Length: 512
Image (tube, rainbow, N blue to C red; front, side, top):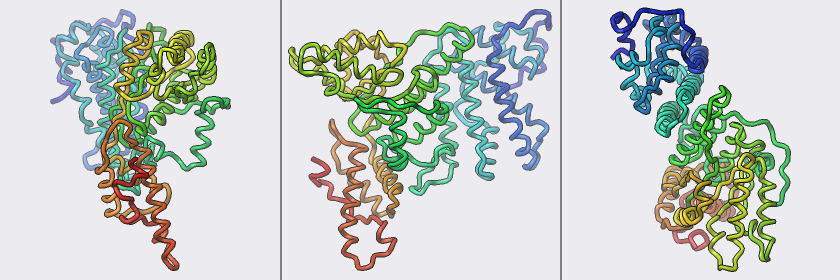
């Protein structure tokens, strides 16, 4: 079906009236212009190099693509408001059809200009596939540029109404995920056999297993995170948002958590765009609850969220400070509030992650954990423009904590769950650790590792990424004990992990 069927239909338009002032918000036009400038110049030479290609039509094809995307994002929530349609008509009147200038929103709705177009977001377009094919052939990154600019159009559409809905943000995120998955499927395989996006070629596991080497990881931690009691040094400039989101997407597993973080980032971008244009924004709490077993990437994602919040202007510094009950609760009257204030001072301008937060209310009536909670609630309110707090712990316990305290419930409205890793994901984490340590796994050893994870019982406290790291370290130790008995081992023997290097599934050092 053609999307420009309405062109040439003079009967559906009123007489053109060019005398009136511009009626539309110009921000969509800016996003469309950026999309056009980024995509059209690369499409033209690609079209020139294919049979029946028409490079002279590249600009028009890109404009039509931007129109289709704009219509689809407008239709995402099933509504087409006057503000959205005025922006659409005003943007594309000089680009597609001059009669748009005199078309009212009511007329646009009556002809179904945007109705039923949301499906466009669910599958990559022919133009996107052309760019992706060129990337595969030439080693370029045109499809990623298309995706970034298309998402920017989605964000601009979402700013046009006073209230941005979850449905609109979900549509943007599904569009991004669908196209990013398509890019990844065409990306070169990594050494572990997993395709990675062009912007993030090194696989990362969300427990830190896929982080850079120890030296660079230490440097990054010194710059972006601190543990309680250590002064925060000066930070480098904020990292680009797309780089941070690419790092998030490069983590192994965590599909649901990634989607929620993307939605948070999308909403923050829309709010920032509205503020920049002097439009009203809805006040929202940025505090979060993370739920899940240990080793599911909560700290790693928390560090990325801190950086994302800094990039988007939510916090000034973006450092991540981690603490738990021992860092907040004292043993004597009057000392707990002082400890809590000190931790908040350290996290000022960044993000405070409170691990096992439910333990603050698990003591006796004489315990000072409740004093810590009361102080946290007060400081969260007093410093709401200076600090973001993430409370983490097991799902049931965190639901009980937040549900029992109205002050927490109203200030921590968003919960992100981190499920246990699957056997495949744990095996991928193990493989990424081996790759970074310059060890080799053959298919048989990898199958042995996966079988080891499959034999483990998932209960509360299951170690996830930490268990994968412990298993890898145990395998390296067993391999060293095996190789040391080989006379003059080869380089290959020194770096190869064999099935017999994998500990027994009931090894008490790993499963107790």
